Amino acid sequence: MDIQVQKVGIVSCSGEEIPEGTLCRLACRQALDERPGETVTICLPLFIAGGEEERTFAQNYPTITVDGCDKMCAAKATEMLSGKPSKSLSIPEILKKHGLTPPTKLRHFGPEEDAAVKAVAAEIAQAVDKVLEEA
Ligand code: SF4
Image (cartoon, rainbow, N blue to C red; front, side, top):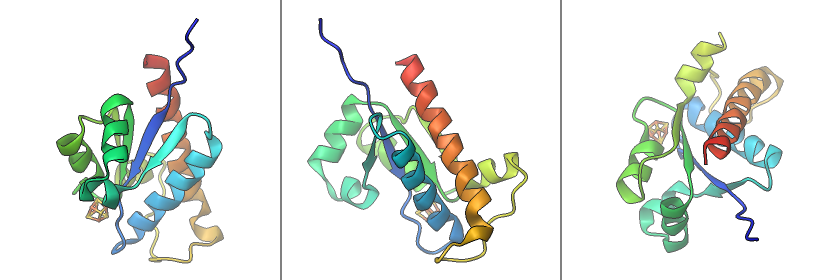
């Protein structure tokens, strides 16, 4: 019997210019660490630059995109280059849902930003579970 191991690709936006971009990357990292066998990271710049491995993966496996602002770069790039993401998450929406204020630091997040990182990572992990359930 073939057992197909399902994996989900997580595509984080690469926003460097706003704190939500940093939050996005840190939360994605945390979610990847929490779901090691079920998730892989897809590097957005490499994906856009034509990384064959990234694009092929995203064509064949479900993806979850996580974006720092309403420009939704990761969601748009994934849809354009490989196919519609299974879920597209937005940091402002997640923060609003959890009643959290957006971070103000561009980098060097500390304990003050912990709640936001954890909330976003938990939303990503939940989205992974849901996508795998539906697969
Ligand atoms: S979604 Fe927003 S924060 Fe992320 S890369 Fe695009 S413009 Fe930057």
